[in-house]
Length: 288
Image (cartoon, rainbow, N blue to C red):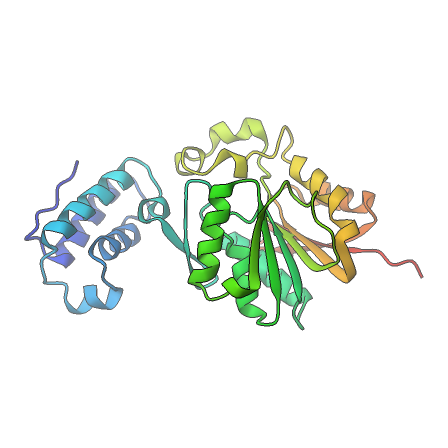
């Protein structure tokens, strides 16, 4: 294990950490090093910039050395520090939750774009860390949301994140298998379900394959199992003008359009910052 000496200055510790991570081929070495130093020492970026000459101290050195060893072993930074940011908000993580990813913010953007006046009754299927639900509740102060997940560990994490971000009084969490136990109507149903084909998971990067919960990754033989279930359960739950929004893989747009059409839903696709199809928004088709 790389040992950081207690007398090492904060700025030197950051440089040492960055060098060790870069030598291991980690592309985000500089950023990772800064995050690990700040978290290990309990300081801010401003503290590091203005008081970088201060020594890390005994406890800080031990904690940073441990963090660095975990990162060098391939553990993602978010897993090492147990938290990550999404939609500008802090979220705690647990082994049962995915690390919130920037691509998923496209789903929040799509929901806000479709419901510019807000949605009063929300459901987040497979809520995980609760990041989608909590982000939407912070944007819509009159909304109430329900987060469902099959994992009790994930639900505990989501509940804590709702409290951490000041929306606990407008959020409820329950254990459930997608929408099977729900009765509507709801204005908005959102989901970031597992959508990776089972045989593909072994080829994912180690940071994802070895550290993200398989339950949140594995979408069955073709990656579409969760969508099929959701699309048979949700349409009956949507109130007038209600929407169902799901995150998808980059190559799943046509499959989701077909699944939506089979349930009498029209589909609109939203793209992420890289230009890939990322979110399908579905509404009930109205016969004139």
